[in-house]
Image 1 (cartoon, rainbow over the protein chains, first blue to last red):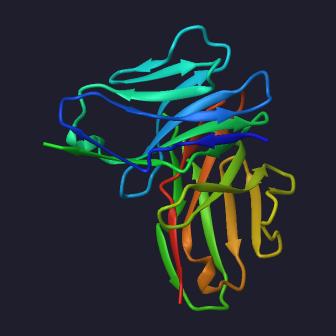
Image 2 (cartoon, rainbow over the protein chains, first blue to last red):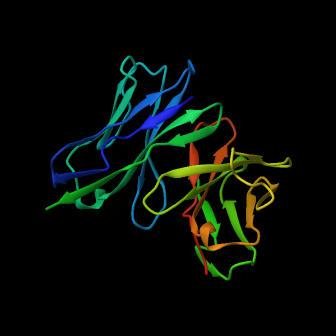
Image 3 (cartoon, rainbow over the protein chains, first blue to last red):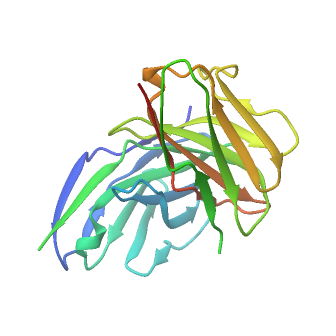
Length: 113
Length: 115
């Protein structure tokens, strides 16, 4: 069965510093996708970054990068130069089958000045 | 862009009443829409997958007679919580997938409170 694990319920980081949010997964599917979403207190899910299982390079989107280690089944999100507006819940997600998503339990990131 | 809207954004209702939540893809056609439920401080849990013109597929443990889903067009899916009870109080989020695209575009969510 597929599973997504986020072991950090909460993280603190100082403004302008980098932070890594951990995500490990388990799947028997040969092809899968990994996503990171940000959920601010307002509740909407904001797509951040996507990594396909066959992608050779780690995905990057601006200040976000995904450290994909396939052998270790990890897909950590790295946020560089943290900003106060980055404070939110962050969810790692993985495809289940052709179109469904399963989510991890989330990590609450707090950026302090 | 790919914008998904939900209506209403919040609703308070009495126990025993039914509540309908709409999910619309505003600038694209969504062959598949998904309904999630998120309890406070918890993750999103998929409730059902809604395909245009066909019956929804429900996840294990989700009562299809309680959570009625209709996907009448390529831009609209509705979730009706029938005979709502306080334990149905939750944040309901829909997402829509473009044909041929892996990404799901999420709506802003609907907060349901059942008194």
